[in-house]
Every structure is written in C-alpha cells, then in structure tokens.
Image (cartoon, helix red, strand yellow):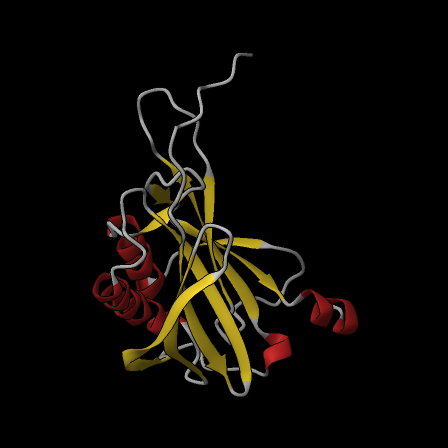
Length: 188
C-alpha cells in the first residue's frame, strides 16, 4: 500500500500546564500548531489560562493548576510562568489518594487535508479521581466537563496539534486506566 506524503511542517513546540495533587507535581503538554509563535508570551499565557479553565472541572478538588511552560520541539524549556488565576479542580467525582487515581486520555488525529499523512496526539492527565472499578483500560463517553475540554481542544488555534503541527480533532470518548501499580497490588 502506498504511503501518503509527509507534511513539510512540524510543530514549533509545546505548551505545558503544571499542576499539583497535594505535594505531587504533574505536567501535561500539547503540541503547538504550525505558525504559532512559541515566543509570544501573551498568547502562551492566555492559552494556558483558558486551557487550565477547561481542564480544572475534570480534576479532583485536591488538584491545583498553577503555572505553565513553553517548550521547544526537543522539549527544552523556553520559559515558564504562573497562571494569572490558579485553577482548582472541581470534579463532582471527589478525590482519592494518588495511587488510586485513574489516568484519562483524549486521543486526537491530525487533519492536514490534501492527502497528506496524519499523526496522532494525546491529551493525557491524572485527575485525582477514580471512576471505574473493573480491570483494564476503559473507553467511556464524555461527561459535560470532559466535553467542554474536548470542545476547547478542538477549537483552539494554538494547541492540539499532531507531530506535523496540523490541527488535531479529538475523539468523543475518553480512555481511562486505573493506576497499573495499584491494580497489580490490590487486584482491581
């Protein structure tokens, strides 16, 4: 089977949110779309704040999103800064100890059009909540807060790109996996 031509562009870098659940630091990053200037501090700060506002309702109240970083394509930090307004998690699902939390993952696929190759992207986060009590990964439909996050990611003109820097479209379900170590130890 013939391969599609590879786009001539790549993502100019990453925007990263930095958050804590208690004393444990977590990071989540998304690739920047081709044409976005990673040195535009105002754009990076406003996008990070909007992203944190969309992500906060999907996280437990023990999570606080407080800062962001901009990384080059090799994941070397260009700069970091505090959010204008830190965002506390507000998920109605409550909170659990860190080892019991699920990992959530929204998967997107680049959409370059014109018969070019597409790449995948993931929006993976540790929300500090547990939604399932069965073994293995699960795919579930999005709740209202996750749908709002997906809408933000699909609508952003700054983040949510594949490796090639083309805008990704995120699926309408979330993959979730209970902490694998916890599963092995306690038999979930």
